[in-house]
Amino acid sequence: MKSKSYAAVLLAGALALAGAARAESATGLALAQKENCMSCHSVTRQFMGPALHDVAARYASRSDASHYLARKIVEGSAGVWGTVPMPANTQVTPDEAASLASWIMTLK
Image (cartoon, rainbow, N blue to C red; front, top):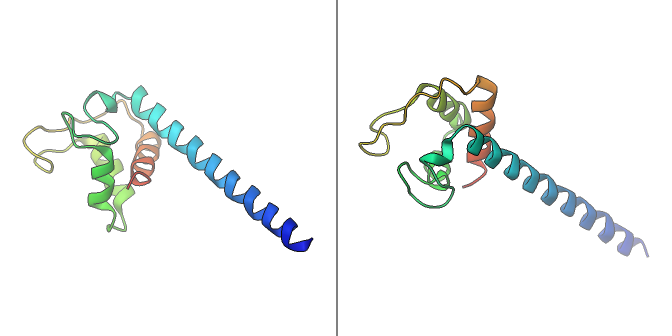
């Protein structure tokens, strides 16, 4: 009986984590859409800018990846992913940039 209770607790915990991950993913995507990130980026395919999945993969080994990306989101970037520059996103607050960067890094 104890093993069934233990299994039920583990299952409930796994489902809660999965639900939280989906909610975070939906929140990140909604913020990216609100701030017009998706005008140039896609989650899984290259568009005008790189796929966000590819961005996460490129910077996965950096310990400061979220901080680095948050700064690039606000300040813009040129020459890192090709000839098309990413303009500065001055409408994005530092907190929003940090949230976007954290979400992007979950896509690897």
